[in-house]
Length: 337
Image 1: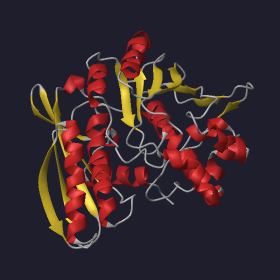
Image 2 (image 1 turned 90 degrees about the vertical axis):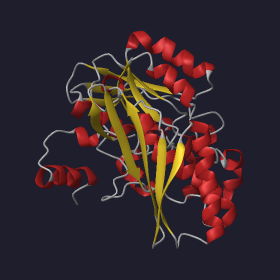
Image 3 (image 1 turned 180 degrees about the vertical axis):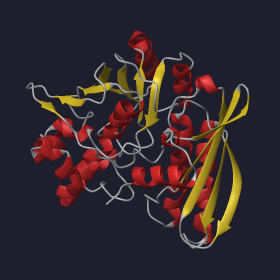
């Protein structure tokens, strides 16, 4: 089956007459003045905490964080957000709690909840926007050979929990201390802004669909090679997942985006890496250094501690060719190891 990117490429080419790859950036980017661009993005976040009234405030925070995340991925502070709300999503009290959750996240980001629309159905779709100078915008292209790949999260956390739940549902209590880590999905935007001001991120994106997608974006958009040297340990406290299931630790880092919206991937100028990591540490932002780019166009490889070199397939959570299941991950990624 043709995938999501293939469909959008056809839409851009056959309907809109575009042949460039700018549509693959995290936002629509439109110049509105010689030195100013409007960035906006649309998303349909899931209700990951259920539909009861108590959960809807958490869903509101989650929705705002996910929708605003693409503006952040482009290196800009989100200024406004609005939603089209399906009135049948839950009862009116639940929707009010959901909206309060949106405001919680807006307050954290200095962003305005600007309203939107209430319509039929059960889905919620949001739009966020920001403004920035064109030269300050982070795109998915522009990486240079020698850049260091930094991910702004303890990547692997969400997927380790997902895999454990699939294999050991009767032992869910062993993950109890991690169960609430997505209840407050705001990133440290102040720390991100300090990094952005260094102008050292040559390419970047959010990891809504995982690290493998970012690697392929780099080789296809920037014409560089990508070498991943993945950590040998899972985030603190989760080592038992790989150990008890007998699975290789490195496989958990090649996951389909379960650390959204905390995880942003950056191709960083190597000279600036110490300062970037210092800002993240000082601000309490978890991060993972996962590899580098090199001068070997369209080459992607994963270096293993035992000397093996693996080549991951084009694997991400494609909406038209769903790959978010543990079974598909086992077939596409785990089988490499």
